[in-house]
Length: 76
Image (cartoon, rainbow, N blue to C red; front, side, top):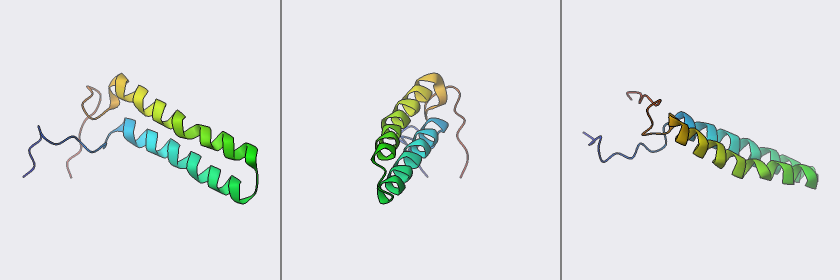
């Protein structure tokens, strides 16, 4: 059995999921734009990666992180 105090949560929170989805969309769109040789879209898509990190940080600070008051862990 896992000790819940020692378990860091591994990012299973709305903040982490939102950040990862935004960054994956940016990475995927940038890769597709690169294949179609659209440098402007590559740079616009690459801007989504730090934006995703900032959104995740902001949601974590708003209480949607692993140890936040608005987060409810799900049983696996």
